[in-house]
Structures are given as structure tokens and as C-alpha cells.
Length: 176
Image (cartoon, rainbow, N blue to C red; front, side):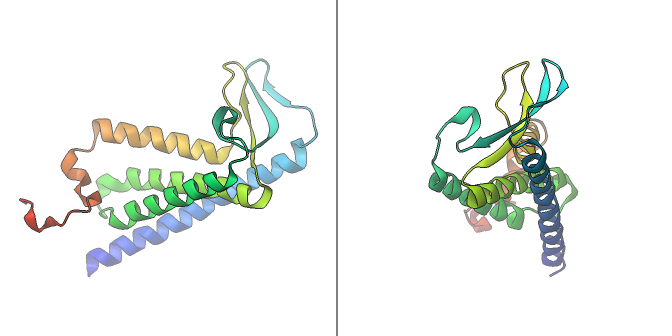
């Protein structure tokens, strides 16, 4: 019972953090809409970094333009997977960074889904012109950073047995 209470506490904290991160994403997008829409780019580092208002109706590099239904379905699927992982994730210290990554992915997912539902596009504004990188937003930052950290955790920290909690198989046939 104590184990379930601890997991529920973590899930509660995860939800609060996800909401806060989503609010930051939506706040930055609101600022951009009010201050950059219809305006010239704000050059922060000439030839390297600028703020550029963009209504993105697709994914990175403009792929899959005007596929709102597809993106909404994928975002819901991702959110369900993240929720499953957070519910199943043990309440041990070694999983905290992984939980934070899952929360970051969920917050980015929800932030972009809100845009798609409200506007039929995602507001992007962060532009690295030096490397011609796709224009992105804070939600995208959450997703990319969290995914990179998860990749590093899977590569260097977690062992296969550390991820058994994700298995759909029943534990009764496994050796402990």
C-alpha cells in the first residue's frame, strides 16, 4: 500500500510539472503571437540566432503539411504511452530523471496539441539560421532534450532488468 501511495505522489507531481511546463510553452507562444506576428524577425545573434514567427501546419522541415488529424492522433498516442510509463515506473531514485524526461515529452506533446486544436497549426519562433535548422518552439525543446537524455539513460545507465516494469508479460514465470 505504501508503494502505491508513493507512486501516486510521483504521478501527482508529474502532472503538476507537466501543467507548469505546458503553461510556460503556451505563455511563450502567446508572447510571440502578440509581439512577432506580422513583424520583422528579432535578431539576437546576427547570422546565428533569431526569433521568427511561423505558423507550422506540419512537422519538422515542413513535412506532412495540413495533416492535423494525423498529428492529433499521434499526440494522443504518445500521451497515452507516456502515462502508461509513468504509472508503471517504480518510485525509486534511479528513475527520477527518466520520469522528468517523460513529463517533458508529455508537456511538449500537450503544448503542440493545444496549438493544433486552437489554431490548426503550431506556433514556432526559435530559429538557428546559422545551420538552417527548422524553426521550433519551447514544446519542441522539451521533447528533443528529454528524448536525448532518455537515449543516454538507455545507453549508459539502465540495464535491461531496470526496464522490466514496462513489460506486458506477467512476472510469475520470471526468475527473481
